[in-house]
Image 1 (cartoon, rainbow, N blue to C red):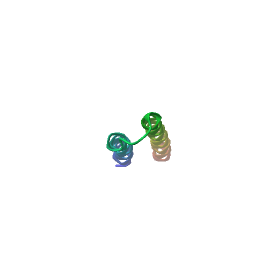
Image 2: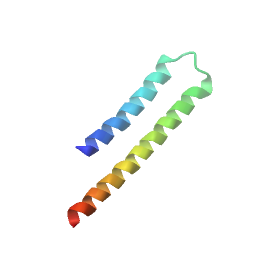
Image 3: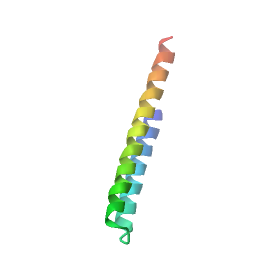
Amino acid sequence: MRKSFWNGLVAGSLLGATMAWFMSPQMKPGSARRIMGRSRGMGGRARRMLRQVSDGINDFMDR
């Protein structure tokens, strides 16, 4: 269940960044690149956090 939550969080952040990119034509040219970079960074952090939580649960279950 937790994995699907984090997958949804990552997918939602990527979808939100994509929508912001397409829906904001008044943005400066570098803004879209900056938004996508932040989105990728958030996805990476979410994956690392999910891995840590998963490792912690596995360690707990092994005891």
